[in-house]
Amino acid sequence: QVQLVESGGGLVQPGGSLRLSCAASGIIFSINTMGWYRQAPGKERELVARITGGGRTNYADSVKGRFTISRDNAKNTVYLRMNGLKPEDTAVYYCNLQTPGNYHYWGQGTQVTVSS
Image (cartoon, rainbow, N blue to C red; front, side, top):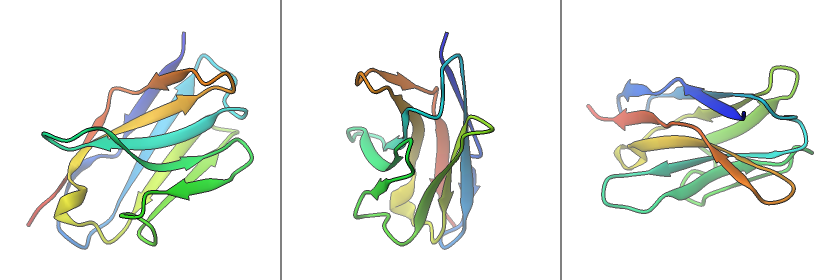
């Protein structure tokens, strides 16, 4: 079955950086759109960044210029590089795989906390 396993979350000070990774298995990785979503306490889950199989990206306005999504199809892995982290970036970050048929798979989530 399809599995998405995230890693790389943690506690970081404001202005710091983190890199999240998400390794996929059980599916042909390269043809699917990969994304990162986040959910803060009391808020709805929101899209952070997305990358298509062809490498086209889009970002939430709140993270443009600070976050970078990338993928390595040889490793079945998608990354989210987060620079200039702010307290408002604190959330559980979820990896998402969207198939061409618009079916979604989710990872278990990884906590990112930005605090001094």
